[in-house]
Image (cartoon, rainbow, N blue to C red; front, side, top):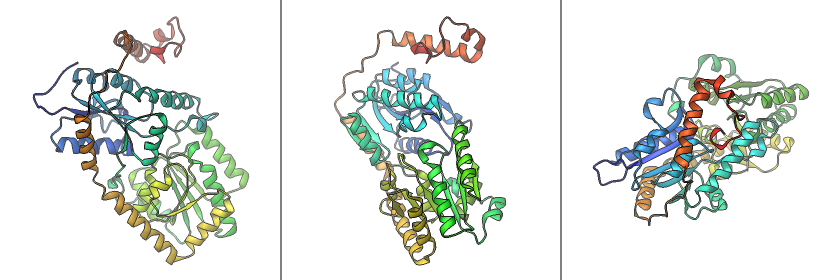
Length: 411
């Protein structure tokens, strides 16, 4: 567990549960690795799982045990509790925790019981890192403040600097031909999950359609896998209110996403919990006026641009929508404010901030070694054997003399 290159510099590795393709965390992880390698640091990405398109860029999180060294720095992306997190905790490496926020579990009660448990346990597990981290960073000021509330003594911000490469593609022609006409298109992009309050988007759209623009359309873009019951409640709401022209598009390709932004006249968000909200700055990039509910990290992400609203009365929001969409001069002013906010975001020296963080941690006094159970590694090995049994011999796993989930190593 003390492998080390001949370089006098520490290695700076990243560890996280899952590396996704095209999402905000995945893009940040790849960006961090690029900055570190360019600066001459040895840097690998250790994960439990990865999108097949990114697997060649990663290593299995268990390999981190052999790569570990007390002088190395682990950049630990914490978004929910995981086996990779526990391995990182137990090793001797210094640690920078990057917090991407965990949605409060109450949003998922009655909708997704497993996610209620995972979000609750993830927030609880985060507390264990208060004295384990040399530095805890939020990827937004909102997330940094939450870390402070959790009791982390040394906090900072490593800002999200989004990439728009996935939108620099030819828009899907079929989608453009279907929606690019004289009608007003209201757009929301984001996962179809309860904290996004899609039902409020639908109610505001309906009020706008009834009182101002009867030929408007609503485009809802985002994955809903695992949230089919929530999706069913949205369909029920649409049927009950008799809301026409709501297009729930699910997960889309980059070409389809680009087309959705290209045909949109207004981006409308009613989300109540966001750690940053990348689709807002994607809308900035595509020069679409943004109207968003002023909650969680959204005001900071908007950075004085776009339009925020503080009451969810659908008639009130519909009136704002009409004011924006019926005044070309106002719409142009809003878009200019968004251009300026996006320029401020993109001119942040992400690489310089990251390297300053590494230098700060390298020069800081070493924290006491984290205490773990004397039998941690034995229990970890036992858990790995159980996991292998669960995956490859499920019948034998189910025949074990305890119910899955009743023992710590099997939960």
